[in-house]
Image (cartoon, rainbow, N blue to C red):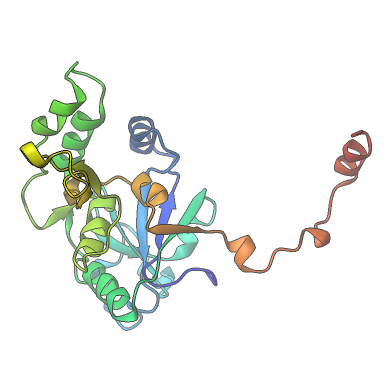
Length: 241
């Protein structure tokens, strides 16, 4: 918690059946994403923050993550929810304070949105290797979600938040084609195209060249000289030539 900053994306390796499917289809460890919003929810009514069946009297009022879940939709949760999960912190590089606030506000204002089931189906159809359609034609088969602005999935909502301030995540790169002048240096320049938000998956924040992976152990000041090794480990090391 000391390492996280508002605007950080927390990737989670889930343990549900849906999580396994997402990890397989995206060839990634990460199946879920949430945005750290800091103290933005400190004085907010938590009616839209709770999951179904959550005991209000036992709620940690320090809800600092906003996420999308199947069923509850867009809610906020405490960081302790993922204390026993494999996670990764992805931080947007050089994000200005005003833009960071804008990203956080974007997520907080959407508490209560529904989960877009159709968008999941679209993503599965896009990522599955079948039917046997050439890769260059698969995008044409994709319908962009339900088309309902009150619906989203975990990674697409976060992608929308960053796109609202024109912060890149994982742009498409395409080469220009200008006919006779196609051989010029100018026409061969690469143009970055912002991808549609409905195509983003949790792994995109991990592989993005614009997000850095933050490791809490290193941030706290790692000193390998202070590592305590077990006797078994020391015995193994002593046998190494």
